[in-house]
Image (cartoon, rainbow, N blue to C red; front, side):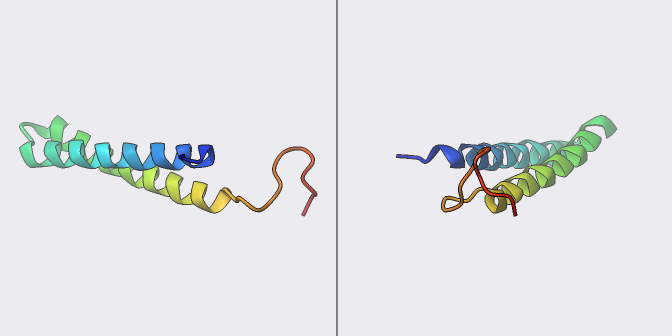
Length: 73
C-alpha cells in the first residue's frame, strides 16, 4: 500500500536517520581525531540526504503527467 514514487524519499529519510545515529555516536565517543572528522563529515552527508529528500518531494507530483509524452512547459 506504499506508493512506489515515495520509495526514494523513504530511502533518503532512512539513510539520514542512520547517519544521524552513527555520526552522533562517533562525535560523542571521539577516541581520536579521525573519529571526530568522520562524525563531522557524516553530518555533512546527513544534510545532503535531507536536501535530497526535500528535492524529491518537490519533484514528485501525482497529478502531472510524466515521461516523454508530457507537454513541454
